[in-house]
Structures are given as structure tokens and as C-alpha cells.
Length: 317
Image (cartoon, rainbow, N blue to C red):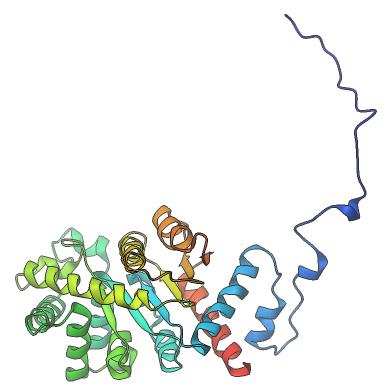
């Protein structure tokens, strides 16, 4: 059957009054200009109550509320957060009580360790790879592996081993080190490694036994931290694979022991929206019981903004 050229009859299309429609964007939620000299709180309040801006406000509220009732705020930090210079911002949040525990990957401890030692990190891989110099800084491989080997041999996890090393040595730039600050403030740090992914694994001092045993201990410590997050907050900042996978298993173990983790808030903060963070941090752990948020943006912009908003909100509540 061949269809003819025939216009559809619109004469009796049904309509309704515009004001009767439920709309997702209303003037009450629109942004407002910020006056010159306005505070960070004024800036946040001026944001539209729509999409990511509404989520940002909700995240600030959730973290502030978790701190107020001592429900816990656990930060998962990827290496990019450290090497973009956010250590001082994170340390300030730690000192103000916005950090209950830190989880990180092997690359993050390397960058933080180098910052503590010499005040610099993040080599030029393109320049160093060809001549065979990539990852071969002596102090990084020798001292960091030594700290891990000695600490794990004494019954510690990797996080405890490295933070205690920094606390004992007090290197020149320790004031910029997140993990040195963690030792000073008694904030637990857990380190979750994948063997072969980090430059210190290329050095002869690397011990698979110490790395594996230490990381397993840290996983069990991390599960205990996550298990305390009833009405608390977990933030995944800059880890696309390792920490989202570790977090999901921690949630599974906590719930296996009968801990509901009710009213859990999770946040993924990165400059891309990846499958594992979106699924294993934002969606699955909060389904039916909490709220998950995804903030897309550069860490070096978003984390200072979030920190400033938290400090100002906390000061008036």
C-alpha cells in the first residue's frame, strides 16, 4: 500500500493553559546577580536552584549536616587532586572537622610524598619516558617503599605506614602534605593499590608482600570507616576505577553485617562522568535509601569552591 501526500489535520488538537502545566524551570529558582564584594555564601545562594547548581547546594547542606551530627565525611582522593595543588585547601577542611577519614590510591601518596620532601611533584612523562628516566627518582622509590615495607612489617596498613613516616621525619614541606596533616590530626588514611600501576613498583625496594598485605589491611580499615556513614557523606574525587570499586565492596560488606547506611549521601566530583563512579558511587549505594550526586568540573576549581562554601555555611549554622 502506497501512502499519499496528505497533511495531518490539526484543527482539533487539544491544548491547555500554560499556567496549569508543571514546569521544571521557574523564576523562583533562577540565578541572581551577586553584588560587588559579596561573600562565597552569597555566591552559592545566588546560584539557580536547577540541575548541577541545585545539587551543589544540596551537597554543601549534606556535608555541613553530617559534620554537625558527627555522622562522618569520608573523602576518596585520586592523584589529580593532590598534584593540582589542593593540599592546603584539604588540610584546612581537615583542621575544621570536615574530614573523618581519607581513602586514596597509590599514585596520590606518591604525589603527596614528593610534595612533602621537595615541594614539587608530577614529572613530564613525555619528556622522561624516551630516555628511560620516567619514575626513577631515587628518594621516591627508596624512601616510600622503605616506609611501606617497615610499617607493614610492624603490623600497619600502607596509610598508617606513610603518615607515621612523614610525622617522624617532618620533611621540609610537610605543611603542604595532606598525609602529614592526617598524622598530626589523627585522621585515618587508607591506601588502595593495584600492583604495577605506580612508579614505586618499578624500584627494587618494592615488596609485593608488603603492598598486598598493607593494602588489604587498609581495605578492612576502609570498610569500618564506610560502615560508620549512617547519615554521612562519601566523596569520590578524581578516581575513575580503583576507589569506586573499593567503595562498592565496602558498602556491600557493611550491609552484609546488617548496617543499612540509611540516608547516605555520595558525591562523585570529576571533570568527566565515568561509568564506575556514576554506578558504584552515585547510583547503587544510595538506591532507595540516600542521595547520590555527580558534579562535573575541574578539581582545581570545584574543590576550593566547595570548601569555601562549607566553611561559610558552617560559620552561620
